[in-house]
Image (cartoon, rainbow, N blue to C red):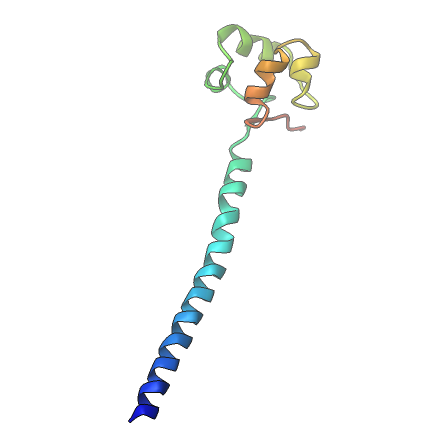
Amino acid sequence: MRLIAIAALLAAFTLQADDKAAAKKAAAPAAKAPAAAAASKLLDLNSATKDELEALPAIGKARSAAIIAGRPFKSKDELVSKKILSAAEYAKVKDLVIAKQK
């Protein structure tokens, strides 16, 4: 009788360990998904509308108009080199934008 109880406990622990391993494997791709989603949500400086640009932090009507007038951008850091944004303003938006090439 004890042997059956021990075998049942061993089986239960083995199944629980397998469930945890499966949960970890399932969570690994899910952890990568937000990073991929964030990358796809980057706003392209070369094709964004005025309203999309104005939704960014530190970008208002005048800055969005200057960004549109300064197109095309080879890289997003040209916002600073073309003197459209200050370094402090650029720091607020650099992780939210991209300059895609056609």
